[in-house]
Amino acid sequence: MYQLALLTPVLVLIIWTFIIFLIMAFGRVSFMNNPQDGRRIKRL
Image (cartoon, rainbow, N blue to C red; front, side):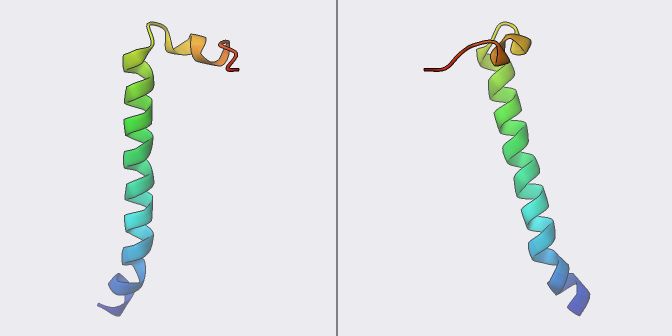
């Protein structure tokens, strides 16, 4: 049980990062016609 208490913050951090990555990837694909063109767009 003590090991689970130690691993809980690490697991939460990994899951949180994965969720944020999914949201960003989904938003990128949704708002762009061609996601591959994203790196060619020069942001001012």
